[in-house]
Image 1 (cartoon, rainbow, N blue to C red):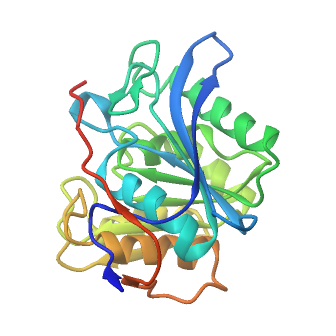
Image 2 (tube, rainbow, N blue to C red):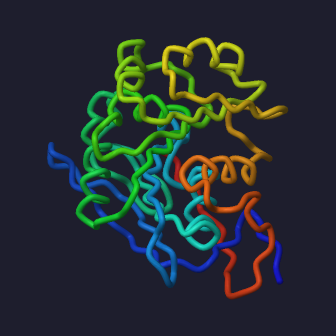
Length: 248
């Protein structure tokens, strides 16, 4: 029995993938599936702002990919948006202030559809929440989990699209967020009847020290039949990995 720590990698079927956008770019990604069964749901992870260090290897997302296939039977697709670099490599293109990234989101959704993966949810973090709100309210998307949403690029009109869709939107909002605190989030997301704001006491924007609770909240949203809190110990094969963070 080992304690699941920040560098613990639990068993999964992992595959390095390339996503192809409609404007011809190749995006670096990784698909992680449960090791010995079909997934019950699918997470498409949209990472924080790449001009400030966000990438597919940002700490919450590598932990999600390393743990959730084994602990919650979830498929996890993480990828670098255009121009973003991580240990996995650099995606082609250049950062486009959330505009050209519409095609990146579309490429990710096309990929999971081609693979026949079930019950697709977008999970955005910081800048990634704006990508989800701006570009992700599509028929193939079941709902969205938004971690530390700043509501910086997305517009009231785009919130209105989510409101009209009645798709679930779960907002995980740190008490001491730099951009949008829980009370203001309640007000701003009040226009989306299906939105739920979950406050994270003591947390800041990057959710450092709150990873386990964030992963539990994601699972509660997308697979409520899975018991949480998720296991903090693992009795089986696993490995330890140290990620080399690549500067953008």
